[in-house]
Image (cartoon, rainbow, N blue to C red; front, top):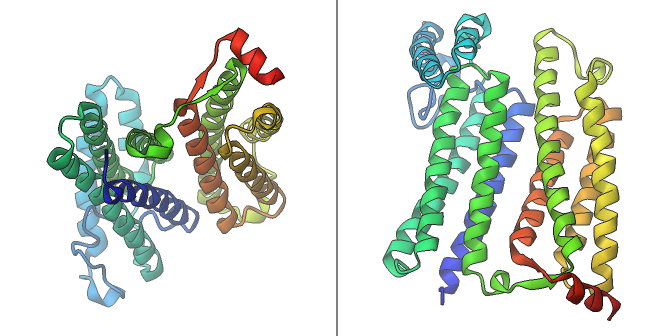
Length: 345
């Protein structure tokens, strides 16, 4: 039996992990990714400056030199992994070494992102230490907490690479999916310790498969969404404003939009199947989140990509993924004969 305080800590940590994703999205949509040119400190201090006057005159050269060294280390690491071509592209891209002038608003936006990440990381660490202290006999709990700490630490390190490479698009995508891995591990921990989430619900085999398919498509949709966002970054570098972005999108955007209809149809089917037994209440919440996400997608396509809608669109996608993932690991399919009789009943 796990204490209420331990269960509460896990839920609070999950909230902070979601806040990290929100903060990261705000950073990206506001162009604040390079608000702090170094990591983990910001302009060499734990509390960043509020004006350029607080920085040395040659601060751009100083942090530029540090970036060169870090990029070289990362390039060697990629080469060791067999990604020599990618490493060379990063090293030869002039944008990798481009230093931005100080902007207090962007600096503090990025600093806020790091603070939330720090709180989430400490939450994960405390969960592991608490687990060792009170529940060390539960090996699965300890291993989940350990892997979660490794995952969030790895993502923190990779965040420094994102900064060092001056926001190379594919690194941002990897950074986000590592955050999604942390969400999954934290949900598995909650499933392990929460009395409510420990309960296994029996459902028809088809429903289990349907949830799995929607989960897979949602993950792919998030990947396509990051590709669209990378294309937006390219358009921004070309000096094109928000009002012209949607006219420049290629096939990735149209596939992303088409798959959203597929998810909607499958979710309607899932709601219909669930309505017969009314066993999984969270499916209705998942459907509501999907509707909000799709409305956000419509606004993004026809309202010149407003930044706050981009943030809410990603947040809804992650929440939808989280709900579906938790239910997928929680629900147990009945045999075909039993599932038919349960649906008839």
